Image (cartoon, rainbow, N blue to C red; front, top):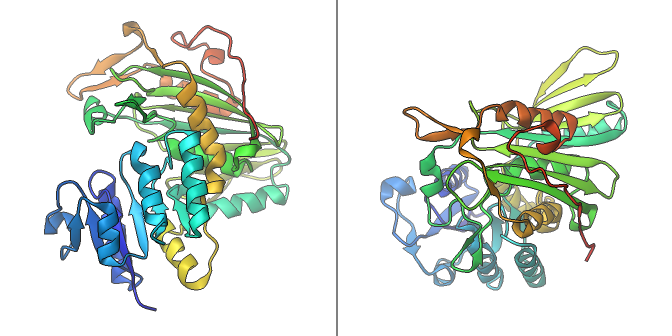
Length: 385
């Protein structure tokens, strides 16, 4: 098998990870870094080796390199147009999460890509974890009884410079275009997508209603401290709480609540803890399949894609609910403080609230957070269309 030529759009910021990953697969003989699309060309050091062809014109670069695969890791509002640019040329895709800033843009992307017949993988790397099928098997075997609900928790630390990393950072809209760069839709989007997937709620029609609580301590438009509760066609709830203003950074996790036990999945570590009646705690460590490698396997040997667009429809329903919700509430000055010497803002007590939300499937307001909205939360019903 000859190495597949790959073009990377967006090679700085998180794109640096993709450069390193493509180079890893290049050394394995699976792909060849044929081109990089950036507004400012990369240096040889940034490119991790010999410089490939570079251009700021994505379509022209795909044509000149003969790319078979494109990795798109660009600002969120550009995802749909770049994905369609590749698909119309017959170039297969690894599209970074979130796949689009609105449900309408997601549908335009997913339907357009499907019409061309190219393969598309959405970059929720946690769904490549071998723990995911293992957990599904445990649930199917009845290890923790009937699923009663799923919680997700992400307590992270980000300094104020994080929200200045790009013109679109921390924005809900920019120049009239949706961005929706909030805690649940971008940095901790994996917590949402993984919680939905483990609860068997992946497609758009699997979501029946959504409640949101969005707020921010930082001087931004979007949310940095938020939670969401999702009603599902399966009858259970999925509650995910997130903050970028934690006292200290913690490993994010998803918690499956069963009638006779629970499973905790630390998705960045591919590690699970099984707790059930009549047994001591059981901990397991798993490997992970890289999503670009899986896409290459799909193209060369017919392996099933791990994260096709339709399997992210439920996540995009959440993005849409956050996009259309009232703008996040700025937290009162008394609710947060700056950490001396670190240029970051902390919301005291939020670490515990995030964990409690995942544990009880409650919203911040129901847990008594003094800064949480006091208005009643009407369930935002989701159409099946």
